Each structure stands twice: as C-alpha cells, then as structure tokens.
Amino acid sequence: MLAEPHHFIDLNTLIWLFPIIFIFHDLEEIITIESSMATSKNRNPKTPFVEMTLTMRKKLGSTAAQLAVSATWILLIITFTAITTAHFSDIWGFLLFTAILHLFVFQASMHIIQSIMFKAYTPGIITSLILLIPYSLLTYYLLAESGHLDWSFFFTSLPISLVMIPVFLVGNLLGRYFIR
Image (tube, rainbow, N blue to C red; front, side, top):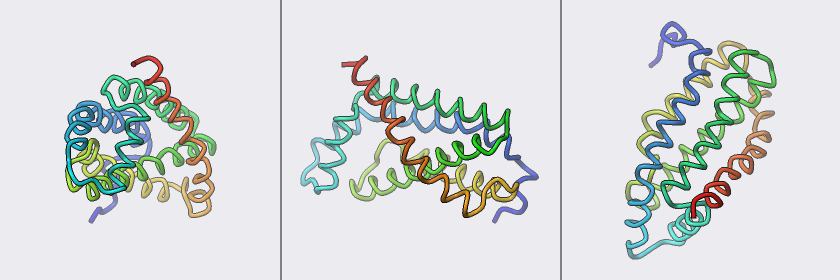
C-alpha cells in the first residue's frame, strides 16, 4: 500500500516521465514483434481472436522498422503533450495528458488480454505489467490528489482519447509507407 506517494515523486516528475515510460514500452514491442509474429503464425489451432489480432497487426505493420516509425510518431505527440502540460499546467494540457493516459491503460489492458488469449508472451506485456499499469495508477492518483482530475474531468477526457486513436494510427500508416 502506498502511503503518501507524493513524498517520493511529484506530479510534474510523472508528467516528464510519460515519454520515457512510453519509450521503454515500445522498445519491448519493437525488439520482440517479429519473432512473436513468426511464433504466433505457426501456432495451431488459432482462435478467432488470435486470427483477428494477427491480421490486424499485419495491416498496421508487423516489422520492427514499421513499428519504430509508428512509435516515433506517437512519441512526438506524447513528448509535445508532456512539455505543454508540465510547462503551462493549463486545463487543456491536462485534458490531453489524461486522454493519452487513458490510452496507455487501454493498451496495457489489451496486452494482458492478448497474452491470455494467445496463451503466450505478446510484445509489450512485460512493460505493461511493470511500467505502464503502475505508472498510470500512480499518475491518476496524483492527478486526483492535486485537483487536476475528478470523475467529471475523467469522463470528459474519454472522447478525446477516442479522437487520439486515429491520430496515433497515422504513425502506422507512416511506418507502412516509409518501410515496405
């Protein structure tokens, strides 16, 4: 149980850690994507969920180089968000920051679900469990404690999360365009 986590780390530090946490997570995915795709492709039998996931991954870019281009695009957005949120500390920065934080939690959840459904390692599961989820929970806690997050703000930021999904997917298109 955490007792007063703000004595160990403050919200501003967590905001600056946002891009760094993302880099570690995406490095795990980049390093392991190709071997994981090859292993999953050869597994029998495949459930409909596994088939759908493999097809989607193939369409979004399944090579390390394509994923690196996508990760770079997302990192630029996350870094911009972290800088503006930490520097200006306005409601719009926190709204975008919280919206992207929701996507972190969603992505970590998807990694967990995929690992359960694949009954195997999936790229990103380790950093989801040891970095993304603890980081996100601590950040939500400190956002709430500092008065930047309440239930109304939480739910207001959810539609922005939905808008950010296609913005992030542009990175996948760039990866497929530049790396064939």
